Length: 109
Image: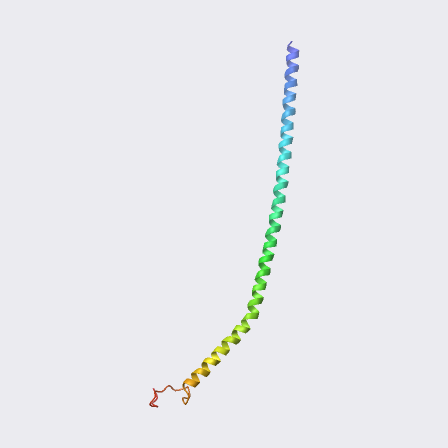
């Protein structure tokens, strides 16, 4: 009877070891699957980040190009406004050379 019990104990230990090995293999496979899934998502996120950086750089370049074309136009408009202002000032003070301020009596101030 002791031999049967010993063999039964060995068998139960063998079964327990086999079950533990199966669980370990399943856990390792799940860990590997999750690692691969994580790496895939990480690569996708990196790809999206690069695409967004490219779009931002592209929009910035377009914006800079627009500003570069607008700047000369604005500078021209500013020169026109300044010219018109000078012309308006010279018409307001006709007869005055524009260099020496004077009062209406002609005295230099």
